Image 1 (spheres, rainbow, N blue to C red):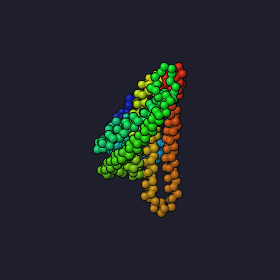
Image 2 (image 1 turned 60 degrees about the vertical axis):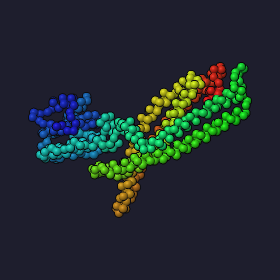
Image 3 (image 1 turned 90 degrees about the vertical axis):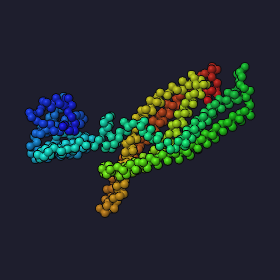
Image 4 (image 1 turned 120 degrees about the horizontal axis):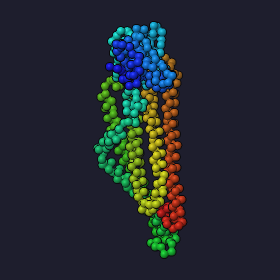
Length: 443
């Protein structure tokens, strides 16, 4: 059975033109570097008689190679910068067969082992359980071997699983939701009060207009200001209470996740722990769960409260002037599209940052554990240089993420605030012609 890559149609047609009678195909593998050094497909076929590299499909590209197994004394892989090369010794002289990128290294290590076995007259015995380096669905490189693809993981399933941790704390969850709704309602009061102050107290009434009899009424102004103070105090109280309960709830959920994660690590078989560096697992248990805690304590309440606030503001604005509401919402599609672009840039960077932290923690853990050995062989400077390289790599990706976030956030803030510019432009004209009151525009 062909291993590890089955020949596709065009490769099969090429093989039909170069195969010999009674030749049995034992191994087939696709490299990802062409004979001219560019990225592209190049096929290797190993039979019971020869090692064959199929001709290239690009114009002017050949790269055809056929080496009898009887001429091969050894098959090895050579590590190159960013990739490697499969080499054989033909009658004692080294000869390159195919080049490939680093993602193909585990596969061609098995191919070299298989060629070595056949050249020595041994039965072919290779494994098809290769480390998974790319996502089988989208083809992107995985953060780690046999890991999960951040792009293709089921977000809804993760959210539902995380929501399951809320079930034992449903009372606190309901209380937090109530506080968020209360805070949103209170925050919507100041614009309404400000409209009343401007239109009913400070602005002279138009001839024949009914203002409710509060123009110039200082007592009523004091009452409205006290209402603003009460709304501010209520907002601060709701914020403090929500933060108090959110800190408790998020920490309890994170502790439950951390405990379950540790129990799972304890129950996994030894081969799993042999393939994972201890520092990487420590980073998952500590730093990743801390990030989850911050998201639950700050991120979720922020998203929920601001979502309610957006709905409330749009509703009140539509009651005052639906035309002005549509004008203010003109930049909204740009904000949504810009946010999607920023998210596509930040998401892979976030995965790389998490992976960099894991590798940094693994290196730090191993270095500190072996510090006595390093001192015994006077390798302190070498260890310091290794640490500096890891630290510089982590700093570089952190700077990249921070710069993209800050620049993008500033740009999106400007686009969002452009709605206010449009409101002053079109709303100011409406005030001038008497279609809108100044209080409504300010609110």
